[in-house]
Amino acid sequence: MTGVMGPLPVWALRENWLVERRRLPLTAVYDGQCEICQAAVSWIRVLDRRGAVSCVAVQDGPLADVHPGLALENCMAQLHVVDSDGQIDVGWQAVTRIAEAIPLARPLAALDRLTRS
Image 1 (tube, rainbow, N blue to C red):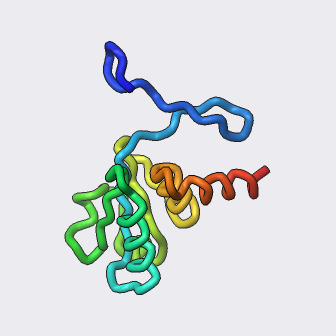
Image 2 (image 1 turned 120 degrees about the horizontal axis):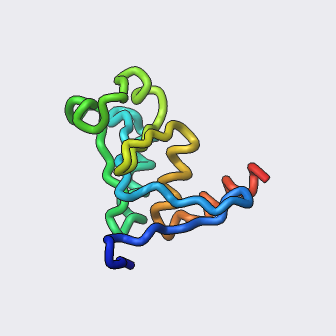
């Protein structure tokens, strides 16, 4: 939905506070030689019908092209997600960001919120 000044913010109720969700699209940075990572990326590509998540293997090119704050050794160890505002999420937080962005995966994000309560 858009307003006169551009896209309207998407609001989510989280931890009893009303917060604006960070902007899409997301870029998921993963180890392209990791079989678990490859399987996860395959599921993301199947479930992400809106194209909200772009997946980039660390072997595809310079990480600085994605975000200057990304380091190869860190991205090889854990999944990293960068949103359009430049915010970086790592590990499980990265997984929940992806789940929030893909409607068919949102139950996973809801499970994360339940475990924090």
